[in-house]
Length: 261
Image (cartoon, rainbow, N blue to C red):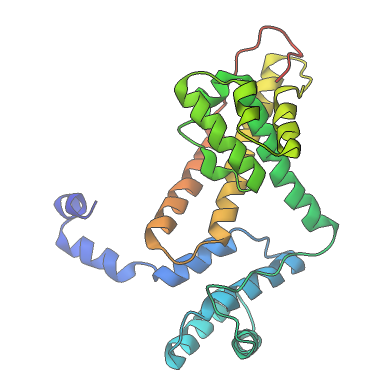
């Protein structure tokens, strides 16, 4: 808090911190880079194209040139290559707010994409069968963390039921008219995950929660449109996730090993 900072460290310290503060756009680019493995050529290419797309928001030539130069230096890129990439997007009439980041091709991308959806479905399975799954995680995740369209719709209804204090399969099924959606919902209530002991089960549950939080963070960060408040929320989320990974174990109640989850 600025007031507390001034009280404890003085006005000069506050002024120094303001002068040393990271430019908001460079901070955004830094956060974006964390979502990619820069040692992977494919990931690095996707990052560079996403970077070029976001640079299109700068319409003043001098400002654009300054940011291209700064980004090239910060991420060890060819300034000329980055400038050409930005120019190519501009010539094609690709507006910054509408440009879609290119997706990876090949099996590695498909596997990663499938894993995020499977994680969402697995979390829904926990929520459908265990009240503790809701009470243990409600301070960390919510319907907004489910980005698959169907999973998001199911999550909204599941969370509404949990907040009312009772999850009812029939009621949830009846909220969908499409038979395929109903089958998907029914499957959540009848999926079993074999576990050998409670410790292993809690670890699997914890991995699912943290996996969902991480996947949601990456999706929201990739779709970030420049809102500073949202960026601060995401930054807080990243810090929280890192802390949870090193210190938190989420627990469920099991009456016997191998119980349906």
